[in-house]
Image 1 (spheres, rainbow, N blue to C red):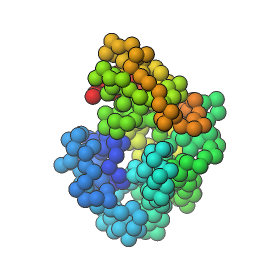
Image 2: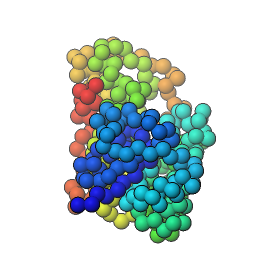
Image 3: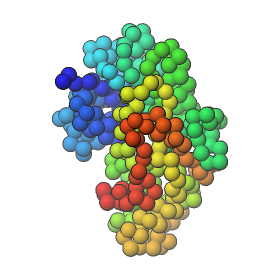
Length: 311
């Protein structure tokens, strides 16, 4: 059987787990990065370094994009690149804009110009929407924000819609908080679990925020299944809420510790005007992927335990 060719833009954790799944599904996987031979850590940890093909690519150079697409002719392009830290985006505003918007725009224009028959998937963030009663859905209005990351992703979200109307097969994959052992140690859940496991005091910000945390393997399954449906926007999330306080309490309890004695609050970790609750509504996604029986099962304390045990 001839292998399906899939191209992953970016070397982050989501791409690495997606690559592992695609390989199991008999895909030939190519992964691009600005730096040849670097940024392979996630693929090395998942023992994939020799199973994927790494390509050097500058997403800001349209000629380079055109060359690789015409030569490789991928059936699926997963655009998972982009500076993704809300906090760092203020200091890295140009990089954030270019990586999250301009790069995606370049790909879509090249696909249209050369009439390349492929699916294009753009990763996006649930933070681009304004929650109503703590929840977001595809009918939610875009939030008014000065954050460079949010603004860049909003432009990318509208861009995908624009090119879909031009008959390109393009999707927006809207993620909430995706957890995995490959996440940076500074991310809240992993940070808490690491400190709890080592009996250490952890410094945090606002522990009363409520977010939608999901398990990476379930989310990339959703991404894979989306390659079989018509182009659309999808919210890929657990659809369940979990507070920072509950993460603290449960993680330290796994080590038979009272969390109240093991954390301290530092104001520098508290974001101004941070919304208390942001949960993704995934009912429509579950419906669209019904024939694949996709429905997140790992969330809440079960997810915290999974991250804790993986470290």
